[in-house]
Amino acid sequence: MSTAHNPGAKAPATMSTGKLAVAWALVGVPLAYGIYQTLTRVAALFG
Image (cartoon, rainbow, N blue to C red; front, side, top):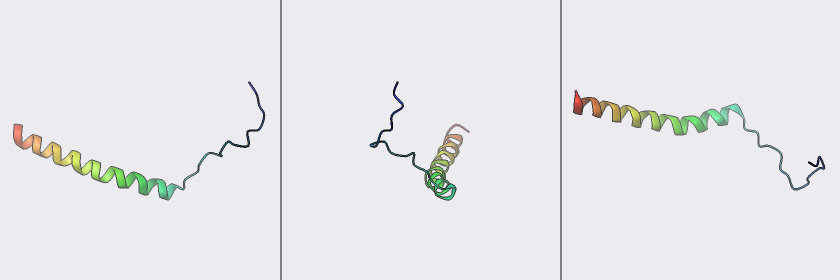
């Protein structure tokens, strides 16, 4: 295994906490709403 420097390798990407929270919110909020809607309709169907 070589420990030589690889000039073509990219440094790991870093993302701020705020951007990460916004990204999760953009995905999580509609997902949570969809799950809520599904569960309420299933409860009405079988309840």
